Length: 66
Picture (spheres, one colour):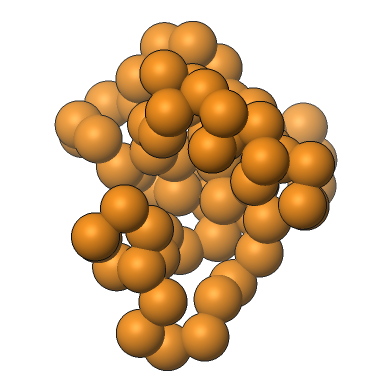
């Protein structure tokens, strides 16, 4: 499994593995091959290995000034 952070919005109604598409900045876990494809496509970036507080998905906090 791979932890990713969403970087691109998708049209209303978009789904990711049967769930509503996460908001920009949210993190989720997906199969490694799927995550690698999403990163290569520019819709996500690899996130830290540690899950964020709050379970499967949560808003990213902090950052490096961006």
